[in-house]
Image (cartoon, rainbow, N blue to C red; front, side, top):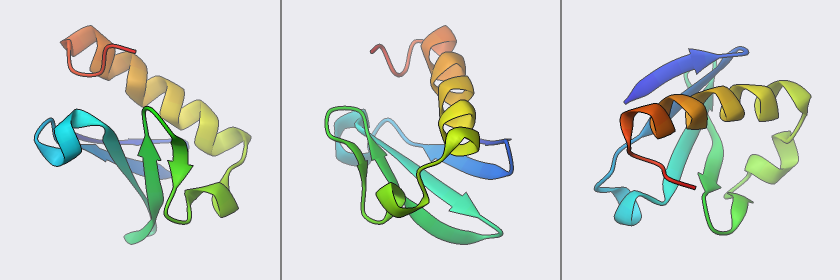
Length: 71
């Protein structure tokens, strides 16, 4: 699943690392990865801001509605 919120593109695939990772892009370039256990990793911690957090919350909410990201 791929969606755009708050200027960021979030991509989730249940098969990717057991459904733990959300890949984050901005302007078609990878920003980093959000790991549902470890939090922001692989560069995402440098970009961490309110807009990114708000977009991530919206995306996770949609994943929860679809039964993918329970947590």
